[in-house]
Amino acid sequence: MLAWLPWSKGLRRFSRWWALSPWERWVLVRLVVLLPQVWVGLRVAGFVRMHRWAENGKSSGSRAGMTFLAGPDDSILHRYAELTAIAARHGFYPANCLHQSLALCRLLRRLGAPSHLRIGVKKGTGSFEAHAWVEVNDCVLDPTTEEFSRFESLGPMAANRETSS
Image (tube, rainbow, N blue to C red):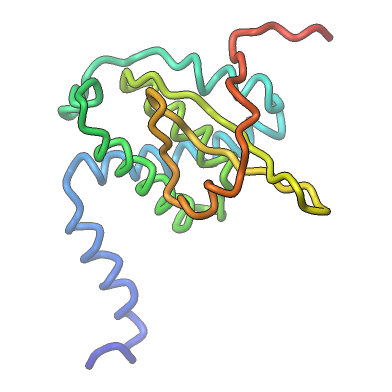
């Protein structure tokens, strides 16, 4: 009925924002700030340093009831991945899978989850295609499951490894 009004789109976004729980809003704000940091970091520091930064995030303790990450229920971890995709779509720029995965990995590490960045390639095609995702205890956190299933993981990458220059 009011869809033709110019401010109706803003009202829908505002109502969706308030429909989120407080911890989901907190996570979205953190990710909207974190994603541009990842974008700049990749350009300034490079992938190796950003990977080390993402996987070596120290736990900042439990905030806003985040202690559930140690539990067997991984649906909350998948929600973090969904919120990362939302922040990437509605942030300052459209972040790709590598940006999203580095930000998600860093956020989960800061919350105490043993998250790891994974990168995979698609074999058997004439062109090079790659995809990045996050795993926590062998649980794949990727909102694009159909896309993820086409890629073969390159295996664990050592974030602590020093590179020789």
